[in-house]
Length: 474
Image (cartoon, rainbow, N blue to C red; front, side, top):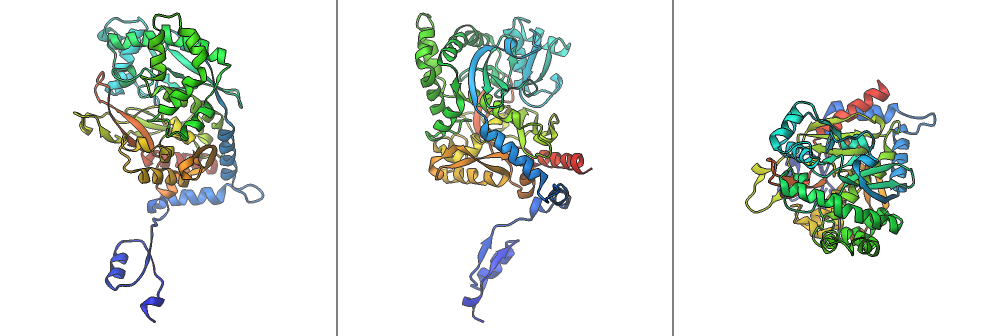
């Protein structure tokens, strides 16, 4: 038989490729790895879940539950209703209550930026005048703190939400639940990166006393703002809505421009407010996107047999996830440092491990999952080329239940972004969710030092899969 009649597919180790090449034998390389990377314990659990959880007709209970989770995600309709002080809309708060990003963590275990932000929030609330007084309050247990996610809330980076801070109030009109997020502080020295000096506190007070009341009045006069429409439109304009929110921020301003102008026209800070919203803070919409995605993802919680990830969150020390069918449990492992591009003068040695609740947007299907729609963000986060970004977006389809037609990507033939991460598919494929993120300096007060991409540790997904198997199969 001649070589021309031989049809060869090379699978496995590269030595096969070399041998075929040396003999000038034509072949096709199949990029394949064994399920779960060959981890036999994980393969066994995947097989048990596939064969052991069937209804009376032989259909997978997990697939049925995950289809319901995706349906709820698609039906979600997040609408901004108000902008109010946190204590008015989040139950059980007093002046000594502060919520933070990520899974639960003790004060003594927090990273530098997180501790710095707590100190700043305590000073902002007027509970202490100095850093030392604020630190003592934390060490003495005078401050009650817990994760934002436990309150139906989210926050970027350190994620501080304290008593007086204004928050966006976003209602999922389809299901009636509400989610909250603070107002984006702008760039530079800000509390979300751990800064806490007088200028940071003054900026937060300006948001509280000037910007928030004007935003609230404008949103009420506008009859609410449909955030789902803005996110869909902004994808088509080059945003992925985690590290790039240029179009979304402008689209939001357009939605409330008239009422907002009426609200600030007699204020001495009117021009500053308009410029902050429409020109000097291109990341303004990030916090709105986070609240919108939280409002959409919460109804996906607590579905029996569902393996869909309902939250991904980081506190600068540990990365945690929640899974629908295991609602209420955190699965954690140490955070990774992002693969990042650093601002001039900084290197990886300066970086804190990943931090923030903002990966809720990837749970919904934007951010890193939509990088293919945002060529301008590629170099900012060090993702390589536009083609690389499209490959990232494509690869996420392998770990999700389906697509969201309400989030179409024009330059990818208007296919919807991948949505509803399935821990089974993550473990089986070895492909981890890709997250776009900012990078904080490891020391409090310095701020953002870069931007990049990061993933959860695979260990989290495997822990969740084992816990799921134990709960439903014993």
